[in-house]
Amino acid sequence: MASGPGSASPTYRRFADLPLEVAGYALSGRALAVSSGWERLTTVIRLFGGGLSGEGEDVWTDADDQRRFLTAGAVLDLSGSWTLDAFSRHLEAIGVFPDAPSPTGTDFRRWGFEAAALDLALRQAGRSLADVLEREPAPVSWVLSLRLATPGAASTVRPVAERLAVYPDLRFKLDAVQDWDEPLIAELQSVAAGRVASLDFKAHYHGTSVDTQPDPGLYQRCLAAWPEAVIEDPSTDPRVLPLLEGNWDRVSWDAPIHRVDDIVGLPHPPRILNIKPCRFGSLRALCGAYDVCDARGIAMYGGGFFELGPGRGQIQYLASLFHPNGPNDVSPRGFHGAVAPPGLPDGPLPVAASPVGFAWRDPTGQD
Image (cartoon, rainbow, N blue to C red; front, top):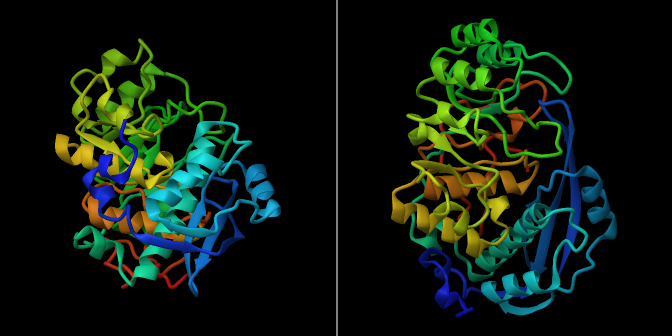
């Protein structure tokens, strides 16, 4: 089987052979108490070489693993002269996360290194990602991802109402959970009429604080209340599947999608998918997904994991190039906190791509 960039997708081949000089790397931590009631830790990865640096962000969700990663420091041997593709293969060979509890942890951390490498290679070439891909960045439509309760508390429409009071043009992606009874749904329809773009059932998370159980009643209530909303990651339990008949054109997948094979192997050809860069790990795998979706006419939108540093801008940049008009879960970082301060943008994100590198300037001026 061919292994060089020539065997990769057309999008990946556009930058796979970019030269990359790496002298080393450094790590720095980020932390924030986010709106869903937990402390988010991420690690910014800064690769440097040739007097320049490139950044990415490890967004793996285990706080203890993030602390260990940051404490260990720069222990990987990444120095040398590479192409971007050769550097990626080196990462795969040495393993960026040897003690990862799951392949997902490895993919998340690897994405941080690969994004930093792309940023550095582009800066060393004096080019931007848009320039290399020959794509024009566009303003980015987005939705605010929100839970209506912190873990252990009852759901309430208050989080939606409070944000709409300050930002009346917001649209939402909401996590649907078991205690959404008919009165709460009716209140939500009243408070956020026309503002719910997608519903995330999170049926494919396991062993986390956001796991859900297959509740046919919940699905019946939600499918009826929001007949136009995207239905993300529904359960495939036999009790739920019959309820999805007639709705497959608005069913999207997120957690199960890590590779092209995951897309082409879906039993119902999707009309729309959530393509989260960190779930793919490598640029090669991500670009393969973009190209397969384009070839099959699958609409895309992007999503994130409460990125606290450069990773947020990078997924906004990718959204601007590949799916600017989707219900992108890439809100400005200012909406991450338990309270959204005034002065944040609530319309499409204006184009903010840096003239060189893989960076997108934060609209609030945060670094």
